[in-house]
Length: 432
Figure 1 (spheres, rainbow, N blue to C red):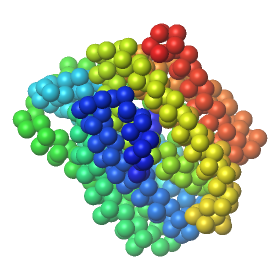
Figure 2 (cartoon, rainbow, N blue to C red):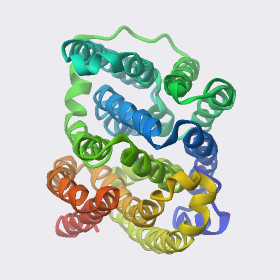
Figure 3 (cartoon, rainbow, N blue to C red):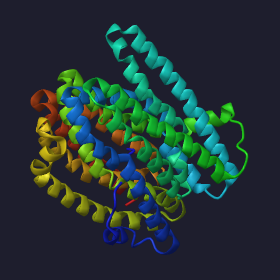
Figure 4 (cartoon, one colour):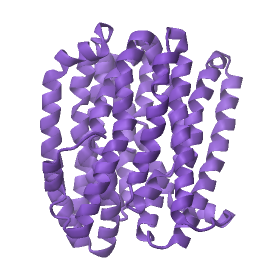
């Protein structure tokens, strides 16, 4: 949901044209900063994909994807709902250093407790289940990502609308560590090193982010209290449930594909998903930059915020749908060149999944910038929960009927359903 690239100044200007003056300029600056950060987060790894697919092949590329999907559960729990709940509270209190310090400390403490619980539970499961013991080493390499996620406070910089720091803590570690993949990963058995290097970039970003937050606040951080930690957990509970539901039709889909098929098929799907994810990341900087604006907007002037949101919806839907059609038509030509001939089965995955970019960008605006920003947390949870249950029923049927293509179709259907349901709720509640 959490769900960058270089974006056209013309259409960006159109999108924020209704955000006049200082607010509009700040958003454009933040979009530009986050575009660079997203380039490191998504597009830089895409440079590595052709090399890793060639070295690892579909089978071991699928093993890496499955391991990362399992680690994603711990990351999901550790991040809780703070990316949205803490961002919203901090955005409203962005000029109060004391209040911001309290939020940061208690979010850190809550995430640390959740991480320890995840580590004990996951290691226990790997130790108890004999068939999983051989995979524990790879899992622990991937778990380093979770440690980084505890320290990583992108939500803080998003809330205070200083996204340039997100660029700094994302780009530098990835530029330094990603080239190691070409040096270390030389055979199929080196897939563990791939996991470790990718995890190390997240850990480095987390450490750098923690240091920058301390510097930015400029005051001594208070000690966390049990009451403060519980308050953060309570505030983020419904958005946590929403992110869990979303995970049921994202990372869990890869696990389901692995259960019903084999790691080679997972590799085909995962490779296609990474390509689509890189394209989708072009929207992420815009979404992250606009979220604090709409949080404050719906808090101060709901009618004006709703008017801005409706104009953005039309622009975003039109641009992403047109882009999806272009990529769908071009996929048979560029995929064999990019992923290699062994991944020809990924072409169909990309042609279907690319339309999820349009759906996700639209439901981001409706769900995050419309429902969460206007404090409709319960309604948002209901939407994604219904979609998650539907996906758990539809995805296995799609896999059994058409393998990775059926799963891709189920994923797009889930995102499209969310769009329609969110729009209906916002119209019913007279937000739009």
